[in-house]
Length: 343
Image (cartoon, rainbow, N blue to C red; front, top):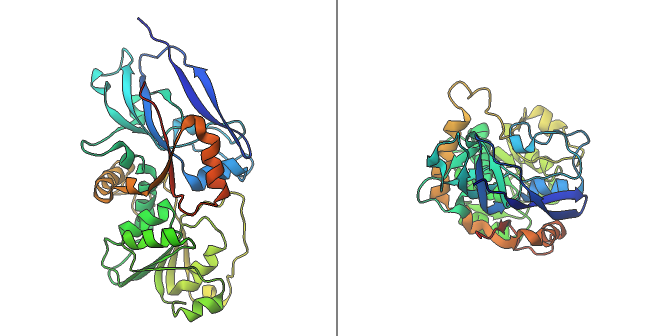
């Protein structure tokens, strides 16, 4: 007997407004499966740009993910970190998928159809909550690969949100001379030390303040993952001669003037754009996304990032969750997740 399914789907309706709609799904196609969601994670950096209306006009949401293809326009579904279980398979799909726990790059919703090639089966022993961090950890792995830290280098990470903390944790695996985290919130500075930073500092407000820390021009490699364009000036000022700045933040429509004067120009500072949807051309002859995923699964098991979850909501409380992130009044907020009923 053919079953019919209803689901709850989160929509960004307009700036500062999200809703949860009830939807009926069409009949299941022979080449699809039904995934029932267990958890989905909010990507605070990217999703707040959608929530705040800070997305450039005619922006293509994400051509690399089937569920997110198309140009940006309200209303839209968004989200890309979801873990669930396959509860039904189409006639043309192997029954081995039935009951499999999977990660899917998919918007926030309680139930959906997917093709098997969109699913990533979770390794045995990896918790659903740890698996939620796959996109953030994949981003951190990509950042480190693009930065290519060398033995004995002094490295800084500006911004200790989820991606920043995971980047710090990965860099702590390298034999560096110094690993410095910069973060404005005391709670996150303490977490950075727990993730392996040797020092965790408040970002200076000016070049004079930076000079007072004796760090100006002392770093070989700097990662900018704060989401603030103004942090790029700090990143450049931290670099020594021929230093590298890896820009992992996506700023949306936010812009800021940069000081590209004497220190940047004469110091031959390199600004490196890093974006996880592709592999750096210099590595693509030997690396592909499957090989990178192998590293990510291993590091998820090793780092157990679910400890970074600070707040949990039902999907029906989505408005409250985004308001909490947008207001930024609670300094303890880090990773917010939606929990879904299994019934």
